[in-house]
Amino acid sequence: MAEPALAPRLLDTLQDALQRAERPRPRAVARWPHAHWLAVGTVCLGAFLGQLTASVTSLVFPALEQRFDAGFAAVEWVSLSYLLVLVALLAPVGRLSDLVGRKTMYLGGFAVFAAASLGAGLAGSLAVLVACRAVQAVGGAMMQANSVALVARGVPERAMRTALGIQAAAQALGLALGPTLGGLLVTHASWRWAFWVNVPIGLLGILAGWFLLPRTFPDGRRPARPARSKDAGGRFDLAGLLLLAGASTALLLALSAASGLPLPGWAVAALAVLAVLAAAGLVRQERRADRPIVPPGLVNTPGIRAGLVVALIGYLLLFCPLVLEPVVLAGRGVPAATAGVVITALPAAFALAATVGGGLLPRGWSDAVRCRAGALLAAAGLLVLAVLPAPGAGAAVGPLLAAGYGLGLLLPANNALVMRAIPAQSSAVGGGLVNMVRSLGTALGTALPVLAVHLAGAASGGRAVLLLLAAVAVLAARLSAR
Image (cartoon, rainbow, N blue to C red; front, top):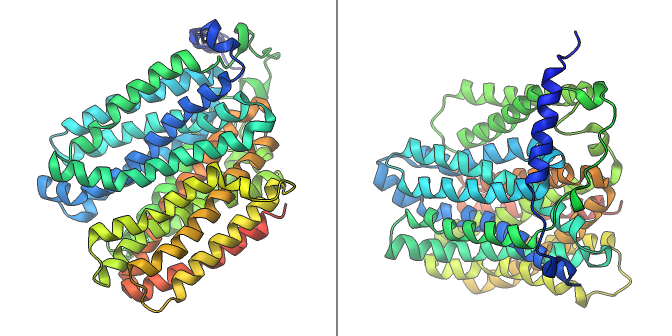
């Protein structure tokens, strides 16, 4: 049956209104030859905010357990709810942003994130806090789905790798500052400030984006709308969204249950089966959907497919040691304050390599060569960390610096390769895919150490995880030869 004519007209009217809502930058800003760096700085605010809230939140778990008289399995949903919503929404929000405007969606993300952070700090129950975190993830998806696209399409080709490196450094800075800031806020103020700290940063992001980000459709010239056809006028891929959310939710719940979440064995097995079935259903659905959330033609392009896998591996390698090493060091009697300083070596080296570290490499090296070199350096650092006989705090610093530096070389170069391979009209969708696999890598990097420690203890489980990560880093080097 033909789609009623009224619905397309209403959608077109709404799309036009949202596109016109984007305001251009002031002329003085737009005419400045280096205005693109102001836009990069604005995107870095969102990148910093996203990683800051990820690392701060883990520090408030003990306070939340005491405040709400809840176990760790329940409090863990403060993080889990955020990750699940983020993974589910990144790709569809990226597709929506291509239609209504990346600037509009990005600024809206700051607003939603700040409002939800305010609500999270005011929450009077754990259920309300978890709900506010889910809403916060909606704002996070609106920012993250557009961040890479705003950088890639807003800077000259020659500056793309540097700009993506600066963005990665902003993420690493938020990641590195989070534990220290979270500890100070919980100790000297309240756990509520771990969420309220996001509000002024969000307001600053709205102001900066309004004045410094260029319009998605310059001078009001929107892409020509082709004659409506099945492909152009298909319905939103709701089935794909539900299958994506179901697969990621079931997978993370199964991993959490295997790591100690009090669920019966049959429930864990059922969740694992559900994750597999939902993933298979998603593949089938995306192949026949008019407007797929994860376009098979885009993902199946060899360079893009390999780049997305490398991005997932890279963030798995980045987050797994951040969760694992504090547990391992604590088991060896290292004080928590000292362990925090030691762990900072990883994101600090990541930030250094992502910004200026690439300049130490030969100028003739391509991004693919930089990816391989970074992955192999990360593998070496993780391998040394795994085989050292019961290293103390000082002995762990060197391997963590090497691993962080290698990842700082790998991820910006890999993201640049992916974004260059994605057509301009699908840049926000591509950016959403990059951020979606990044979030999956982060979630797996959080769940894997907990599972290993639960099954084998801190020492043996930690060594096994580090050896596995070193092998996966070598795989990333192999995939980078594309």
